[in-house]
Length: 606
Image (cartoon, rainbow, N blue to C red; front, side, top):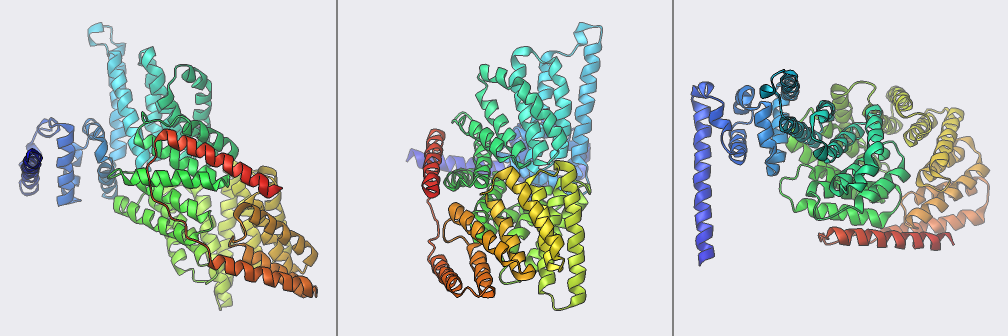
């Protein structure tokens, strides 16, 4: 009975609270006296009430009310108060993006105010009078403001502004007392490396990485495990975006081993999802599955989680690389829809989602030849990147590559020679531009560079330039073998493409046979006998033996193809109940899955 009474009392309190908020919002909407309200009348409210009030304004009129009050009530000091209400982070990201979309340079205003505060405090410190001198706690609070703003900007995908905030904040540590300096400095470096790596600012990221390397031993001795977990996660991202998967995996395992209930949910989720992506690239499928399902389970349990769309993106990445393109497309669609609700437009996260969905649809529709939807999303991504980023940004390389792949397939399907040649020419320009950007930023010996060479090889095959196509494919294979070894999935992919060129266009059947057999061996070892790309290899070998009049082997691979088709039709769909594990249990399960995969690979090799 008491519980029922308590619930009734809480319900009545909430109704009264909402009535009060609605009353204030209505006053702002229909009266003009708010212009003369002193700012203190609003911002003196508790931060939890203040953010609820702003959210009500946003709900009532998303543009007119918010934009009218912005110059007065969205200054840095007020915004910092709102940021301290962790449960409202998603709303603040939405609000910030709406202001940007309406033409308000809210981030630049915050940055200018932050810089002015630094100048003001610095002049106080230079004062002769100790009475007016700025005390260390004032600098410490300004450092906290910089860290909170950078964390928020990272969540919203505004990595360039985050990097500037952090650079300014880093200069303030000379004013901070020594005992408190190291944890905060480590927090700053984790945010900085995350921002610069996520935005592919490789020069700045390398500088930050080197700074971390200089202090990390000292931080271990100080047992700053909470901060170190975030640092290791950022270090793994730094290596991952540059395709250094061994180093990325090592740092990710260090981060994973520091999982504990003492970490924030955000830190745990970042570690889980990023380590999962690295495991996908390492072909540690059971480890990747464990971590991404844990990230999904935990993410779904937290209302209004800003990074849930990131978890959906990484889930799509897992399925796309686990030979389940349909589910990959499903997760990428969910991620894009969620991001559109948050940002609407003019945000790097929207562009990235469009690009990944376009590529997933390109793979899904490869056999049907219907690339209309993939082309639509690739164009959106291409246009967004063009308006948001400079021409030579690393993301431009990726989005041009995806668009070129799709335009090439549309050209191949076209019945008009004029349209076909025009689209192939556009694809050629896009691939060359993407390759140029990639080489400039990450060099020749890089996996992405090898992919660009391979894509150009496929394009020139479509254009009938077979000798040039062969040279590009050989170059792609050579780089991949040097970086990843001769039995890596990426090597198998390029080997299969070269085999196709030899079979269908250059009539080099002996070379093609050898390459197909190698591709089959790699794919079966890594993905099993039901892997989707095996069909292309079996069909290629059938063509090889048909043209060399080897009836016995032709019939043998016809049978192999039938067995493969039957096995594909009987694949069981992978489902699981999303159960949240404790950090200790995740660490144990990860280690067990690693041991099982290593023993399984050893048995396959034997």
